[in-house]
Image (cartoon, rainbow, N blue to C red; front, side, top):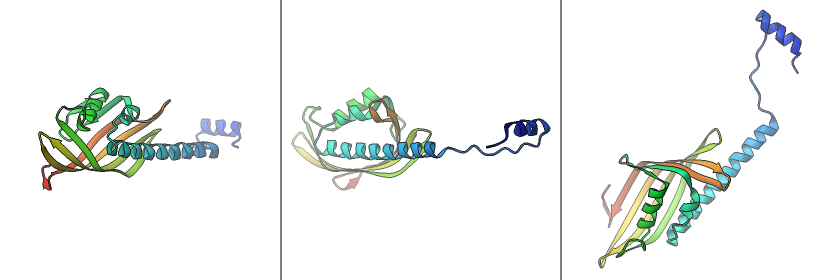
Length: 178
């Protein structure tokens, strides 16, 4: 413990030694526990998304997209939560007349998680293989997308607040289209 009088006198005389602020061990443990819980919750959310895609159940996205969600596509297009959900429902088929979509593979791989305050910045690679049927024709669609996503903890749990596509590659029937 620093002698308060000597420290204040040192400030006046210009001889005080300033020590870096230390975070208490309980605070460090709380921060570590908060981050560990965040990593578990976010990892679990991506696993649920994979399962939702494989079972064609887009409702999980309603739970995992924050009310203030903003998405940024590779072409610069932006969309809010409502628009993102509409795109997801349409893309998963059954909601677009004459189109059916069956997911063969869906895998979200977390490349990194960094922390900015209490928010998690997640780099994630999404790999999907889908079979599309429309107007009697069938096609195989494969895609690999890398995105940077921002997650925050809300009262209801961890939710995605922002998604920025940084790279996307798409193949249709084995031919690269993007």
